[in-house]
Amino acid sequence: MSVKILSLTKNEDFKTLLKGRKLSNKYLTIFFKNLSDKSSKSLNISFVAQKKLGNAVKRNKIKRRLKNIMNQLVKISKINFNYSYLIIAKKEIINAQFSDIRDALFKDYKKIK
Image 1 (tube, rainbow, N blue to C red):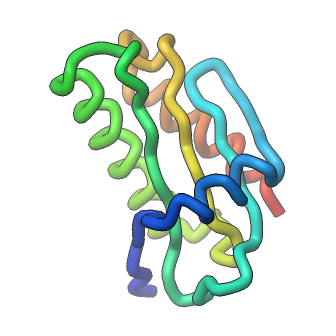
Image 2 (tube, one colour):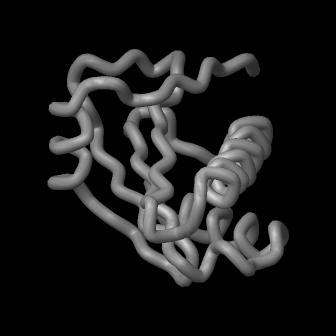
């Protein structure tokens, strides 16, 4: 199943998602909500790494890891395409192993129905 992963672009979308439901773990906070103007054929998701996490190299590494994990999730199809997602990284993600982050994210997406 080929699914296109799109990033959120509108400020209103971010504000709407922040008012939606949320899940948190040691490494991330996931906000999700059903947006009305969204297509179910594409996955709307954005990754946020705040400046306090480190310099641009560290922030981009975090976002690359998260994008890779999301591609794995889409291939396994354990993700609900009716929602739009906003993933905000926490400070603990910097020194964490890739497998630990992946396992935590997989557990959280099993809870989203």
